[in-house]
Length: 252
Image 1: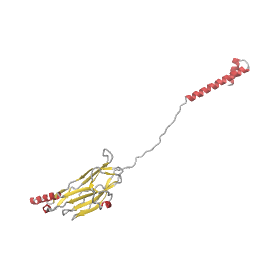
Image 2 (image 1 turned 30 degrees about the horizontal axis):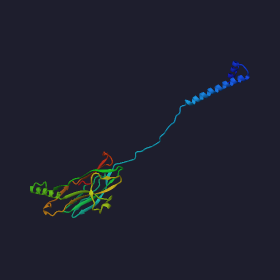
Image 3 (image 1 turned 120 degrees about the vertical axis):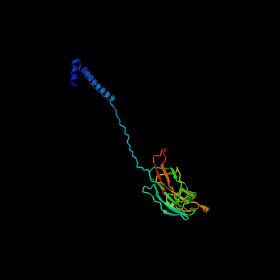
Image 4 (image 1 turned 60 degrees about the vertical axis):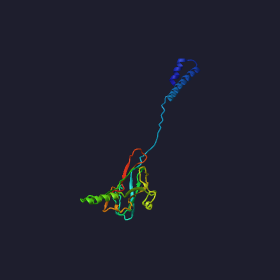
């Protein structure tokens, strides 16, 4: 700034007041230039701002599991006898072979099974298969034609008098609750649901129906097979069946 003052004095001369005016003018001009530089610096400054979204998510554990949790409430009517009691297999999706003996018309045998949804997905029955009993006379393979024919007739007569059913026990979720329920039973059928942690009791019954014609009584023993029942469950609420399982109550 001292050099500027000396330069003004030589250039303009004149009285001191004029020199001071010029000095002030130059100083003021310098300040103005600086001010403009500062202003333009502000005008052309780059502004930045960071926006942040914070969040987290997780995938919860889930599983698909429909099982039998119990079997019991054996109910034998008339002269019916239990030869082998039903049991659950290791995976709890099959009730192993049971065996009963029916002798007189009117005899029946039934068991209750508890089905539970132990998974996290709602389930629905997609199909139920209750097979028709097959009867075979013990002597149908005899070389004696008369005996083999009679055995076949016995088998036909017995199967014609059998009824095999698979029913829901209304309002029951345990064997104890189902034990004394004898009315209001409905067929287990497709479209019936089973929510997570829900249990239902179902009853399977084999009946040798009553009749009055003694000629229809078998002359020899008749074996009854093909008593399998299969319940297919699928994930409820989806148009496609992404999960499914098959439970087989009985495999005699």
